[in-house]
Length: 426
Length: 208
Image (cartoon, rainbow over the protein chains, first blue to last red):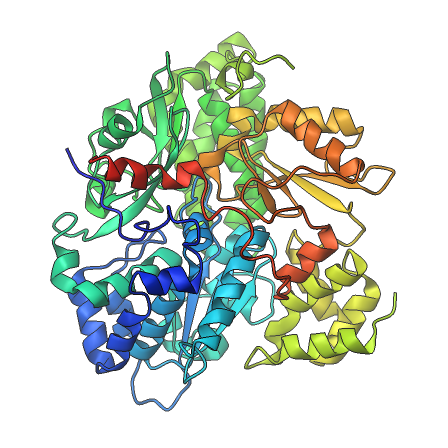
């Protein structure tokens, strides 16, 4: 049985955990002091040696990303933190920043030193007023304490409601003051990112993991996790479970283990389907309970680790309704730049709506798969690819349920049964 | 509405945060909403002038992002998450209930100007589903009844306290100022974390 291993979340249960006093009390800002005394290349090497990989979804090795920044080029370099947490099911960076914004600030200082950047930006989604307050105050306090302002400037940039800005090049366009639409790559941000300068874009959890690595060393981090997926990470459990929440564990824990230690599926119900890493990652079912939740394990089982957003749905949930709603989300959030995604998501919604309402036909399933085939890999960015994941995976595992909608001429499920307040009087 | 000299000083300070002025468009749009309640034509003209852009360029940005409103919203803007997980757990019922209770549709505003309603996408609080946001503060684990109490409180000038937020709910304009990066001194208020956020840590301390 894998044991939980709180590192990022170790002090979240202290009432003042978000203050600079609490952070300093637990050794905060010691790691940045240590890193600033090191050669920048040694910092990059240490992060490479730790095995830390991006926690925003793609799992790219963080140290390697930092190493791509050209050195001695006499250009400004930038660090941009992606705090635009919007992938459906994903809810780890938001509580992290509410409980401990200073760990991200200290990570920014270390990363800036490593990539020789004098300027960092945190791009946070706009729909979280209190998180913006906490982060803004923390940045002010870090300036007052002299951690920022002595060679490293940090600016908080607040978004305004656009899922696409979680895509790193759309985020950069948005930060430059444009509509947030993805850029053609190459050039990659490491060569021409923010203001066409070498830029590292990292997820909140990736950067927040750095201070502990500097403090405790690469070997300490390497000792946790699996062969190619090192360290601990935040798993976010939500949906039809007895006890949803955040569980920080070594990479490679399984859903079965997380369910066992947290209390399992809600009483009297059984697991039907789940996402391992948000709605853009192909659905899993009960047959995947023992898949190791690391980058390789989830990938080998046909999905992606993504953001480790474990959304759990029991047998009361209509998979067609669930997939329709996610598809409506992708249609709404498609930026409109490329045709396969803009037009394709629109058609997917029309067909899925008919199917959910019992007005579809079996031929619609082939049409859906054909549309997905023409969106996947043909879109400008990963939003289009992500839109196809719930559809293709749900047809793979629940084809019969789609057909039941067709033969019955309506949805066979009662939506009341799947609510949290099932049985409560209206 | 017109902008005061003090407003202009604030706007200049927002522009100075960035190495290149155009990056200030988004916080300036949040700031205009904090003064006017929505993105007015006057606001767009002023931002264009300050950043030496065409008004069409500023308008193009303002219409891309859903949080920028081109018409007035309520003093309290309520967003009900109806993305899959919240919808299934009760968000759909909550949204339907609020529409009926308030007598308005999606994007509607009550006639007293107190409450506006919108269905929103995933707001990064799935372990607290179903989630309702008010002026982008968290109201966790909602029911149809608790959401009705929330909007009733807003209309009576006495909204309930956010679950994970400041000690009292600020207005739409006040929240917009926070999003423009202006410190309202409330960062220390409220919980550092809710129970679900702490569950893994608690279990770990119990030896799991």
